[in-house]
Every structure is written in structure tokens, then in C-alpha cells.
Image (cartoon, rainbow, N blue to C red; front, side, top):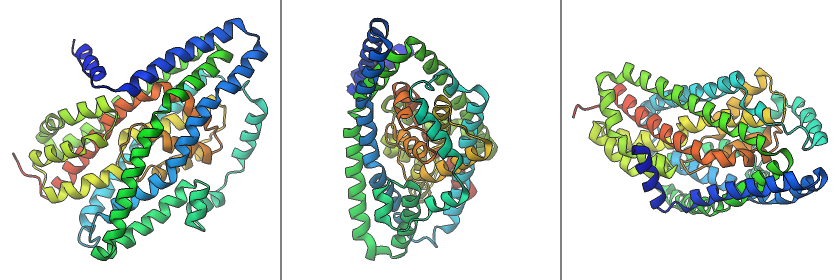
Length: 422
């Protein structure tokens, strides 16, 4: 009864994008299946190559906003910290928590994919055999030297022109720290970039309006060639993802109990409404004001909340990071791109860096997954394949992001002796 009422209120809330994505899924399946059963294999492949342009359109639109989104959000996030020396102690404790939680989340996703092999349930080796061989050969060429070249930019303009996300992150960190060190003198720059970040986030909303086209193109193309057997992948993919989210919640709450003790149930009760909002809107960013209020009511000092929580929204998206590893490796499995343990750990490190500065925007994880797949020579079209189920995954990872950031703020407050009993 509760689920039914939740779904009813969710649909009444006017989430048209969700409705259009579901409709696009249905139409894509029907169109692809009609082609699959009525047309020749050659005609079906030709149809798939043409209709897949819709998913290519959506992917290009996402790629268009990657660089400015990372730069503006990360610089503003760091600059707003203020005097770095004054907040160094608190920042160090917060970053210790962020890094630890991020590594656990990323490792969990990697372990799940290697254990259950969700990507193996979709076979794309016949789609482009020659292209697959080329991808495999390029993957073997990846080295530590090339990774370093990806990290350190020769030019910000070059990095943005080529969408080298790691290089943009490195430059943004230096730029943000220098901006914060200049204090009030640099406020106009911070205000300008803050405005830019809001404009880019508005663009994200526009770009996501093309998601139904991407869903229709990806699904109809795959079903036309492969048939309805493709949906076995989505079911298994989603169930294993939920298993990972459940394990991550158990780990986070268990650590919370160790540090916060009997205050942990109170914290979960306080963030109940923000969790519901994050679930229904698929955006952890949408609950930021409400979460700030509830954490202060929980007993966290406002100076800790105002520092740790914004930092967490750039550096501590636990649910998203678990999903990034899970999705990236699953796509690699789907395309049979070899990933030894060393390469997977390297991808984990890349995700650790590239995920920073991305706020809790709906489906922002796809932006990072797309960039990471391109870096490791995994076909970016794979992102369109997981798009139909991504909205439902986003509900749960958005909730997990809220839990992780609320817990981080409470833990740092406790470590600083600034947690009041209410």
C-alpha cells in the first residue's frame, strides 16, 4: 500500500521525464521487436545502425557539458571553504572520511561485478567485431606513463577541447585552492563561476530531456538485432546493483553506530524526509537545504554543517561511486574488453578523481561513467545500453548519497566535539 501511494504521488508530481523514458522504453522494444521478427538480418542491422544515431545524439549532448560542469562546480566548491588554514583540521578529518568511504564504495562495486559478471548477460561481440579487436589492442597499450599524461594538463584549453576530465580536475583543484587563498579579492571570480555552474546545471536539465530519444534509439537498435533476450541483462543488472546498495548501507550504518553510538537511530529518523525527496527526485542535491536544517536539528554545529556538507557533495557521493565502478566494468564485460586486476584498480583510481566536483544532479553518474569508458577504450555507446534502467538505479544511489553525507557530517561533528544532544 505504501509503495502504491509513493508511486502515485511520484507520478502526480509531474515527473514527465520519467514517464517519457518509460514510454520510450516501451516504444523502443516494440519497434525493435517488430524489426527483429519481420526483417532480414541485414535489414535489421542497417535499421539498428540508423536508429542508434538517436543514442549517439544524446551521448554527444552529455559529452558537451562534461568539461564546464567539472571545472565550475569543483572550483566553486573549494573556493567557498574560505581560509584553508583555519579549516585545515576539520577539512583533514572530512577528507579522511570521504576518501575511506569512497574507496570502500568503489571497491564494493568492483567486487560485485567480478563476482556476478552482470555484463556477461549481454553479447555484443557480433555488433562490430573489427571495432572490438581494435579496442582490445588499444587497451593493452595503456601504461602508467599515459596515465600520468592524462592527469597533468599541458593546457587547460587543450584539456577542455579534448574532454580530458582528469586534467580538468587537477587544474580545477589548483585554481580553487589559489582562489580560496586570495579571500575577498577573488570573490568576483567565485561569484562568476558560481553563476556558470548554475547555468551548466540548468543545461543538464535540458540535456536530460533528450534521454527518451537515447533510450528509444539504444533499445530499438539492440532489440532489432538481438531480440527480447536482451532484457535478461537489465533484470540481473538491477538486482545485483540493489544487492550492492544494500551492502553499502549496512557498512555505512554499522560504522555510524561505532562512532555515533545510540545517536545513529536519531540521525536516520532526522534524514527520513530528505531520503524520500532524494528517492523521488533522483537528486541528492535537491535535498541540500532540507538536509542542512535537519543536521543542525540533530545537533551538528552550523559551522561544521556549512563546511562539511558542501564539501561532501563534491567529494562524498558514496552511492554514485559504487555505481560508477559497477556500471563501467559491466559495460566493459558487455563489450568483452579485457580488464585485469591492475587495470581495474587503475580505473578505480580514475573514478576516484573524475567523480570529484560532480554535484548530485540526476544521472550525473552517467557523465563520469561516459568519460571513464572513453579513457579506457570502452565503447561509450554502452552508456546508452544501461540508460533504460539507470533512472531506477539513480533513485537508490541518490538516497545512498544523502545517507553518506549526513553520516560524514555527524561523524566529523563528533570527532570535533561539536555534536550537541537534542
